Amino acid sequence: MGRWADISFEARMATVEFRVSERAHIVVDSDVCRSCTTKVCVHACPADLFAPTADGGILFNYEQCFECGTCYMVCNSEGAISWTYPDGGHGVVFRHG
Amino acid sequence: MTDEQQAPDPPVFDAVVVGAGPAGASAALALARAGRSVVMVERGPFPGAKNVYGGVVYGRVLDEVIPHWWEQVPVQRWVVRRSTMILTDTQAVTLDVRSQAWGAQPYNGMTVFRADFDSWLAQHAIDAGARLLTSTVATGLLRDGSGRICGVRTDRPGGDLRARVVIACDGVNSFLAKEAGLLPRADATHMTLGAKEVLALPAGVIEERFGLGPHEGLDIEAVGGTAGVPGGGFLYTNRDSVSVGVVVSLNGLAASGRRPEDLIASFKAHPGIASYLKGAEVKEYSAHLIPEGGYSTMPELATDGLLVAGDAAAMTLAAGIWLEGVNFAIGAGLEAGRAAATAIGTGDVSAAGLSGYRRALEASFVLRDHKRLRLAPDLVLSDRMQQQYTKVLCDIAEDLFTVTNPQPKPGLVRIMRRVLRRHRVRWRDLARDGLDTARTFR
Image 1 (cartoon, each protein chain N blue to C red):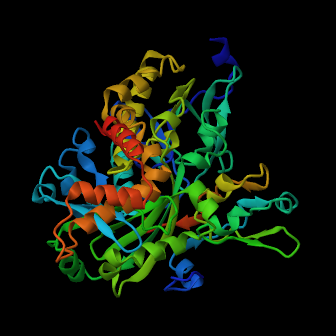
Image 2: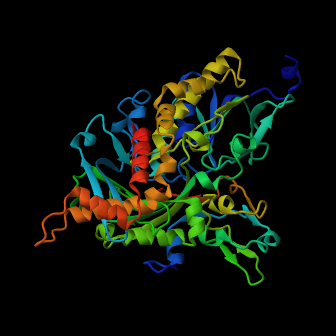
Image 3: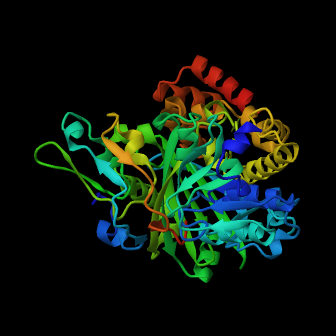
């Protein structure tokens, strides 16, 4: 939570409808991430889905993904993040986008 | 002829349109009106479910295809006030334009929810005879024995869709355009991230707070106010909510170490914005990438059996004072649909047969505006514009209206000299950037 935050991150994400798929549409190769010094995905992801682990890898969630593509666009290690769309009908549903 | 004999399945549709956003729905509408069979493949449960925009839909592009569209469009508010703000941490300079003409026929801009607007536009395509397949992802391109694109694979069981032409309107991440080799795998340099909150506020409060009538709306676009990350903020009014957010350079965000929602909070806390939002609670949080690179980053628009339109073809116009996307997607989608219908009619759906698409766009506002403003995206997000000129402009304006009696007024030239020195801007750079700006926006 940031300095200005007027609402907890959990409450913020609770405003968004997700139809969560069984299949993870994001796959992270933590072996690649361990050699990454910037781990830009961790702070750039607007849904805060990426968390650094103690051993230098990345722990990721896919359930509350906006499907924006920021993570794989800012990732500087090819192959670290495999990103596809969730299965049809699943994933985020914006009502006021 | 031999190819057709070898192919086990003939095309089921004249065209398959991937994505039922503004570009896809418009392409399908044009194809259906031309009497062609067309199916839209939409990965969301309904059109617009995956879509986010940043303020205003300019509807005049619909005049030629949906007469009196304003009588039926699911509008939130008609924008009669358009403010452009230049922000520093503690200052704001605002150009506030109001026109009552924008709130009456033929109207100018409107605020909408994309779930409503995109579904409405797709329904027009359906009414014209197009089919809509929702909750379906187009997972790849189908190619015939000679390698020519002849449809799409979907994630439905047995879900191959064969068509004479594929129109990729699958958005900013267009995996189809990437698979066809038209777009790079990732292009953070030419992307911005939009992050947005929709805040509940009663209609009466909105009208009082922003000086609006019952159906009237306001759109504020700001440069700066994003905690030093290159970009800006926006605020626009819906019927009984306001949408507020930031649009920031993806590379700038990556380098800053800041979180997107922190940047929204920073913009919301700006003294020029904060009072507008008092008591408003978050109804929905959202984020989306925007292809802001403009003309020079557009892919090839046609290849054998494939056309690309809308965000998939980087058609969002991000030119400082003008920020438009939905209208460009509609304009391009309509031309893609028409060009595809013509090519299907002649039997030549090769890149050459589909080249009428680009020619039509070059004659329309879509590529004419983009070509004219091709230098603007870089200029607007440049360091000098973002880091220095916002401060220069705000300081000049502040000094101009600061009365320092008993000293007499310093005069504009002295103020400018003083401010430019304070921010280490050289006259030479200013002159050159001024000339570039004039050339860009001429």
